[in-house]
Length: 184
Image: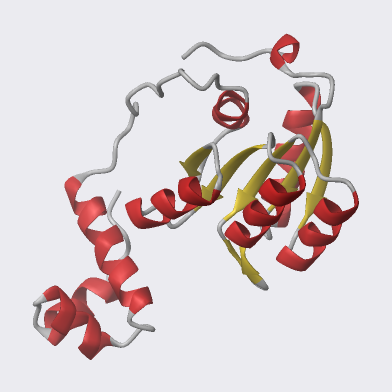
């Protein structure tokens, strides 16, 4: 997929950046402004909902997990207020189930952090028939396994015994895996 340019942006260049990582938002906002977007930022779900209610943007980049809720709530509101909005969901907790949920709710794309401004711009300006290129650095099998274990652990409310039971794994083995750093 070729890099999209300013000419590909329609007349309305408003972009909402929703993320609670302040340094990341500042860097991304500067980069997106250089690409021609009119950026407004929000650090939480309630703040973003207020922005969407008063002036829904043409584009949005929403983090999935925020301190005061889930970015998918904002995606739903965006779709209600402005059905043609282009939304990219970003997350540091990439998982297939959350990607499917994001797309079902109305996200146009789903990117795992760290994503750079070029990836985000390309996702926001992608045509409906564009197919994403294969990843240059796909996750290793160890990383995919670790991500799955983390997801099940979160779904079990961080209960080690319940997670081990669901994964058909010994509890101590799971504890050792959880104590280690994530593989690359």
